Image 1 (tube, rainbow, N blue to C red):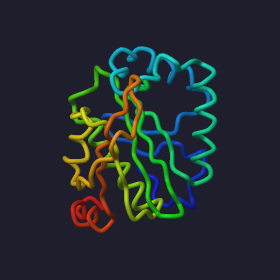
Image 2 (tube, one colour):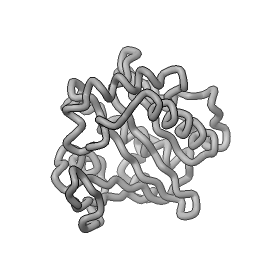
Image 3 (spheres, rainbow, N blue to C red):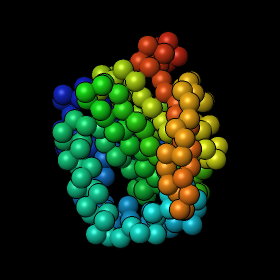
Image 4 (tube, rainbow, N blue to C red):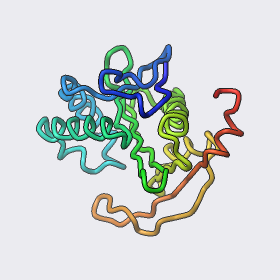
Length: 196
């Protein structure tokens, strides 16, 4: 099940993707505590590339979930939980730039689910939502220079390497390069025409 038309999305329809392995859905306000504990349980693992994880509190999670609900309702994308057996196993977001018909995807996944192809499948489904429902022209993924596992996802899905944003992200007190990958709608249509 996948949302098809951004104009017809409403917050009642929170499940964006449902497969045999996971559900991708906008996190309801009632699950902000679940989201907090999902990150808290993976802080040590996530800290390498998300140095703010130790600053997250229940209050900041509630604020974030409310912001994400507003973003979704405004048609500006989503930050969605990856639910596996009713547990939040990670997140994947699509942040839409309406002026330029493009968006950026960001994601994280709990350590115990890494290496199973889950995030690659989630991102593939988010591409479909972006190009079909949000009518985007381009989708971008940016990763820190040394995050090879994260870089493997856009490479696997046919993104092109656009270049390096030099010293663009401050991580652990040091400015790091970001690798930029993108895919255009016409490229996605060629690669995934059988899935459309």
